[in-house]
Length: 578
Image (cartoon, rainbow, N blue to C red; front, side):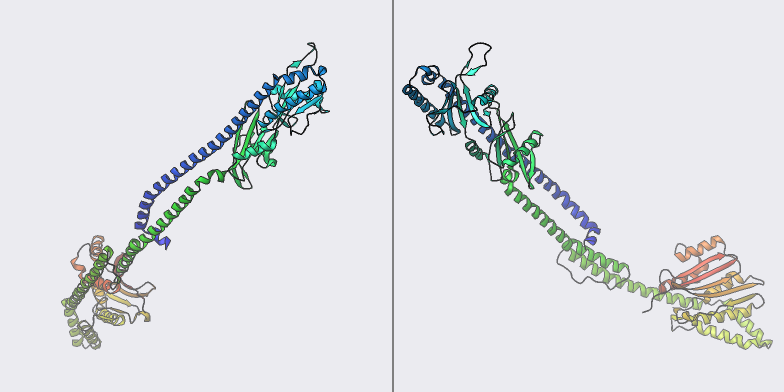
């Protein structure tokens, strides 16, 4: 059905118009949708990056505030007395100073949720003072590895990185103390604020939009991860991708965006991954509507196609089929179902046209039949008076001379006149038509027995009962005698052959008389085709018309000159019987 649809010019044109109108609208809609999606994606990613920048700025401000509190502690008299006058203090004075410093450290610890502990390393008293609840009481002895930790502390101070020994700390040393220029610098004390990894990780969760997202805080210089709100195992791979310039990745077939921000003052960086579906969750309703719109477009296309097929293409195809039937000769075709629309008007007009055509053809057919009958009667009436005179003169001479052939000649002549004067049948068996032509040939043979010979082939049995128009063969023989053999003094020959073929029956009448001049032959052929009129070819034209009327357009007469012979071939197109 679809192949037949697309062969229809009307269907193709209507679908082309539909596509030309709807496809641009669809393309424009998709263009605006994708542009809107890209704009929203950029906006959402910008919001996440803004949140990341805001998080880093807050962290920078928090670190700066903690640093100010540490610096304020440098001028504290309790700290300076404990560091500088330790040798002159008794235990009570020393404990009072330590308690006062612990109160200051408690203020620093409680000033930020990020701070897990605040401590002061004082090498002169070989101890550490910590804030209450920080894991130490009053003060503890310096750790055994303090001297080993000093270089990393010094490096952290010099690089302004808060990270050393994988501990997230903010370190503030006192002035470097030197007894002479060549002496290794040493610190009078070190104020340390230890930050909580877990608390920073907890604050990172404020950046995540869903369970599948994650953010990592890491030292940009060393690449070491400090805190995370996601799967820490994937951090090295994400960092490699980010440093390689990749901004998107897939984890277990789920697409993710990578977001990264740097803090210049702290040396820390933030790297995050967020589920693309989560980011674009706001677009889901629009995507749903896009799919609904696509489905509606497809449904509209199908409905439009079905409507064209049912209300336009199918009625047109039905009308064309009936026109083809009419073209093939089916004059009984009628369109039965007549709808109440424009096609109904066309169908009614078609049915009326077929009825009028049938009436007209019937009238023309009757007129043609009457005309053919009139021509036949005229042909029957146009018996050559010269032939009659000569025949009766020969009969008189044979009787007078007592020739025994007189009886046979009179019988031939009687049978000839009996056949041509019979008016009851327009169509006869071919064997009767051939018998009549054979009688005519016998009569002419007796007339021209010293000048013209006759070769009359036997009619094939398959052709004997073929119904043919009356008087189609004898006038051809008469035309051969009259225009070809009559002037032949001797050696004249007339041949009649029959051929039974699959596509047609053939009767060939040949004579070796005078060839037909080329100009006259062209006029005869033109007369048979209806292009010209030649008076002497009236009998041949009559036979030609009647054969075509009876057997179809491929039937008729063919006149040729070939190798000294003039050939007239009667073509009778075969028709399937039953």
